Every structure is written in structure tokens, then in C-alpha cells.
Length: 191
Image (cartoon, rainbow, N blue to C red):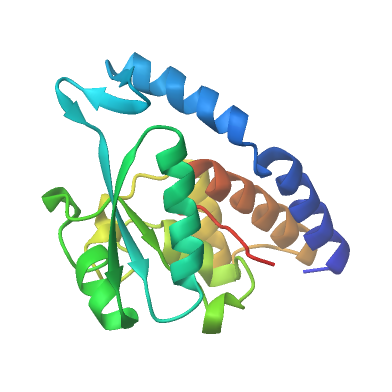
């Protein structure tokens, strides 16, 4: 992919997905109220129970401080966050990837892609493995229900089904936009 296309994709994404705490707070408030939750004394309640998020945070490197930061942001808008620190890929994957999501053992997981999170955001096969139902070996991906257009882009990129580099770039750009909208994964960077 050409450098100019990458720059265009990410510059456009930055304007659409830049950190905007007030926008997030307003959106979450609107959605929580729509679900029947109430904000009492600074905390969200559904019925008589506080809304609690279980957050798996890797504790073996810089992901812990980043996870703690995300948890504090969620707490600042009224969620109770139970931070569960896990060490290493195997321990974490047994819960978030291979465990049954229907058991409700976690709601968020702070992972990373590549060695210390340095991999490029989305390579051709990443849309397929990250957003495709059954695209990964664990149970989690079986619950995915992506937009059909995102799934088509993921499959085309995975199989290399295009006539030209320009067509591939267009499919990639559309797939990336749809992946960000799908939000089963939210891509963040610390740099």
C-alpha cells in the first residue's frame, strides 16, 4: 500500500476517532439512559445494582499502565471497574479468547498486536482473522456478526481477490473504515 494512502486513512481516522471525552460521556449517557440505567451519586445503576465492567489487564509490561488509564476513564464517567490483572498470553487467552463469552467472565481486555504492540494496525490477513466469525482459533470470534461488506472486504483481502493494486487499496480502505465502525476491537496507540 502506498504511503500516501496510509496517511490519508489514518489522518481521516484521527479526526473521526480522536480522543473526545465529552463526546464519549454524552454518547454513553444517552445509551445508558436508553437502556433504562440511572446515574445515581456519580455511578451507573441498572435496577438496584451498579453497572460493573470486568476488565482483563495484562500485567507483564506497559499494557498495565495503559489498562489502568482506560479503567480510570471508565470510572470517571460512572462505571465500577473490576480490574483483573493477568500475566502472559496464555493466562489471558484462556479467559478472553478460549473461554465462553456467554459466561461473562470479562467485558474488556487490554491486549496488543505484535511484539510490544509495534505491528502495523491492519495487514491484509488481519481483517480476516480479527473480524471474521470463526477467523481465530478460540471461541470469541464465533460470536462476531460483522457487516456483510466488512466480511466481503476481509475475505477479498485474505484471498487476494482483486484485479489491480488500486482495487486492493480501495477494498483495504473501505475494510479499515468498516472495521473501526464495527468496534469488536478498538485500536489504540500509545505513541
